[in-house]
Image (cartoon, rainbow, N blue to C red):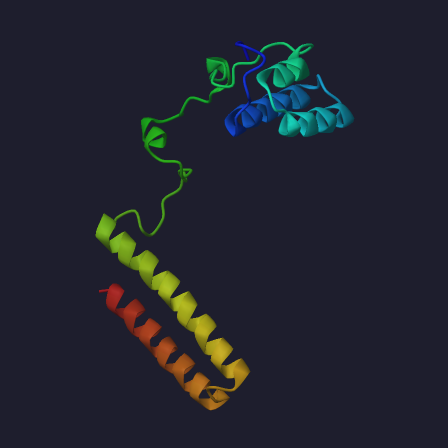
Length: 153
């Protein structure tokens, strides 16, 4: 942290010093006790000179330096570079659907789970009788059977 050591340190300067101390601790240059002592001193520092004194025996670290290119994993297929979601090598039932149809299936799955949670909660707190719940389950099963038969056409 070059400059006049008498200049007052800002919160951003103290935060930057704390980040540097964390990096040095992670690299093994500081023990846990040294790290905590220096971190407290960094947060209490009033001038840039006090912050410089905390870093005097440590090598300079550029917090903005990117990791070495050899550490980055290259995508195996071009399609993986576009998505953070891992690609499954196998085929699924949704492969032939359009994006809109896939979105509808996803929405229906989440909505069904939420309705089921709501119904179970309603039965448990006594807002809905168990017989009404059983009727809803029967209706849901009938609806699922209808959809399965319809999709087989």
